[in-house]
Length: 215
Length: 252
Image (tube, rainbow over the protein chains, first blue to last red):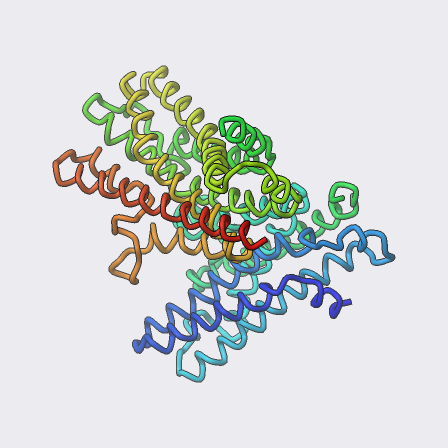
């Protein structure tokens, strides 16, 4: 199932994350100052991996020329949804882990973000949340591009309006783990975002069951 | 040509995605404008004086340039690809329609479709502010002129690239790159990281807004050069797209 999804998915799902990874690897190598290297590593893991996941998730299910054929098979909708999402997150995860291994080899210290588990959660939580947003909105509107721009707009809103969101709804701030790792409500924020992501994926599944909307 | 523009405009305006995105942002900006702190910026008793009309109009439209062009850019990126995907391009190529007319009509229709709802909302907000006494009535024409000087050049620039670039880049790749570009080129301080922010190809409207805030010959020149540079970039990218389509049609 995963092999089929991999073979039928768009090639940019692989080459673009790798190209972005390579770009950031080059920048980290070029920058010699440890603080700048840390900032770039944080930027890649905390901002660019989630953005990429959010926009590509919008295309994960609907951008399939064989969608009608897929609906005609015995494959369950939940299986289709989770396979596509897992594949996408696996590629992003592999890039994030490879990047961490590379910057660690260069001596970049990611411990200001917390324990090794905290470092992983710092990129995983926004990545999962934006992917869930992109996926669910694209299925809700039956248009990939709608999911893509909502994921992009949420990303930009969260990046630019950090202080406004922290003042008015801090637990909904996607980048708390990467920018404010010392906050006391970080665990609650992660829990809420995880629950919201699960709810969004559930809603996406409900939409996908009404397959005539996508034919 | 006129029929093609109107057809493209109608198709773009009928997209639910456009209205969903704009409705969300209209609601967000309305709350920010009319809610008291810390949620919004509305201070009871404070009003825009006649002397502050132009700076306020410039600030208002520059604030709209933060999110709306991003939405427009992502949303309009599939307009050419859509024609290819739905098999329309082959039909269009079999007509006497030239690539230049096709690109111009597509561009004009799409650009108008993303500008019209925003113009209507901005004008309504300006009228509302004047009607409730928060601003003098001169704020309404000032907002409309600021729309022409700040919003239109930014959207013209963004839509030109969003129509042209997906001809050579996969759609999701362009959308990711565009979102990253929009943040990098408009909001990253030049002191922090090398960026296009602050150069004459910054589409955020910062130069026109600065000129409206403190009018001077130097500021007016910067604003004119900024708008001119954006126009040159837009025309260049559309000309390249036209040349690419012409070449593709010749090879087909």
